[in-house]
Image (cartoon, rainbow, N blue to C red):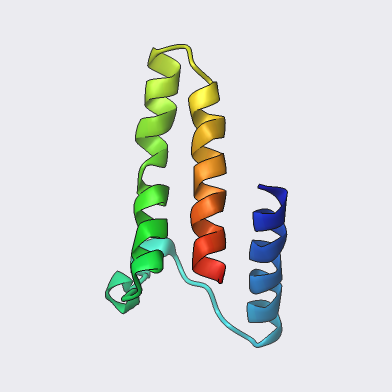
Length: 80
């Protein structure tokens, strides 16, 4: 998880150095995501609200940490 964070931070830093302007997420054109790993990562991110709600309902905070671990694994697959 920490390694995924470091990689994400590096991507953001490089984008900032290149002058990339980030807009609101609602303005993102998701049709540009064509690679299966990109789509897999977006699906994993989409699961967060339900994962948190289920963890609260079931008094099972470990579900959130499992989701984070799985998200990091998806990111590593995307990064390579």
